[in-house]
Length: 452
Image (cartoon, rainbow, N blue to C red; front, top):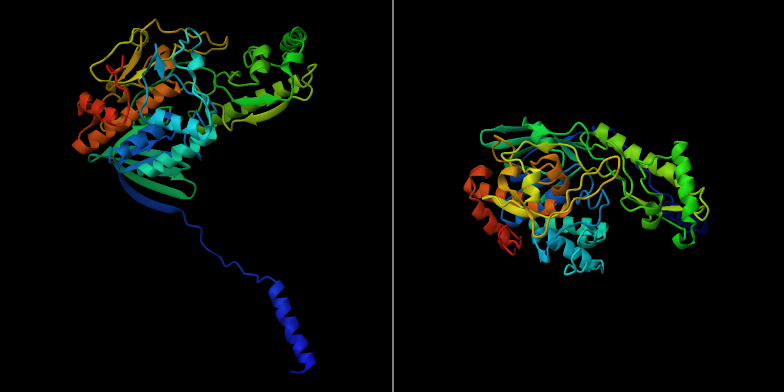
């Protein structure tokens, strides 16, 4: 080969090795995925109750689908940032265990966390028995346990239709690039808002005024021990008079600084029922926080205050409740009524938040509330269960039932009831409560009448 020819060849090889090949995009029609799916149990809502319900139904041997309109499981604990669930113990004994407790225990272990000393009575300081955990690990483990149980998770999907036809639920969902028609033997509404129940045509209840929501966040970069709290309190009160900040949104400047945020904010009327109302709640929460952050940075000793973390959503305490086969009343709750069909416990003070804040009303000694199967079933429905915050209850009872431990207990109860209803080919109301309790005990849950 001549030298000139060789150089040309080498040059061509070198150039071809460094010049990337350019692919030309050809027109492709974007097509939405449309499919039909059959399942035994369909759960809508992958929050506190829904995650546990799905794992229980799947572990009991049922083909299970979990639809969640967000990007992760855990709801209030993860996306809402209330990473201190409770209460699992009452009067020195554990009253809620099972799958929820398993998930919390695994989260604590993997995150090198610690449990409170449950042997020490809380008296009126119920928060001492709340469990501080890593919400990111909780989300990871929730997803892992669902997958291990065989649950099919469908994120970013929302139901648009739910009808009862020919002994099956027909639920249509829409998501990013998807339209899905899911046929299910049993349907569980764990949306927290009774959304599926209302979509199905059944009655839901709500107050004219609902409890405020809270955007969870953390602040730092100041030394609380070096702050002049009298001066700061005076400036706080002055800013309120000038309407620069809102006292209803941040009730105590001292608590805000001492706790570095942590469940201190109140957003009146926070409502997660629709995308529009939830958008408003989120914007109000963030706007309120931003206004407070700017105010804090004007205070002596707080000039370098930083926003360390903030949750993506304003957590909501109250929206709709179902009108169930039985409504748990305030009297039922505080008197610890045990029903023939009680499936789980609840132990939390009556905890109704308003614009003045909250003053919890604790249960009298040795009283522990219970949740009957009938409170998980919308009135006159077939093969439909509800678990979580939208349980059938009056407003005062609901202010205590809505918390995470209680919702986990309800979620597992609903998952067990749905599984047995599937196997027996009946509506959940026809399942013998004792059979549900036995299945729950098999999966390490504590049922009313046991351990108390």
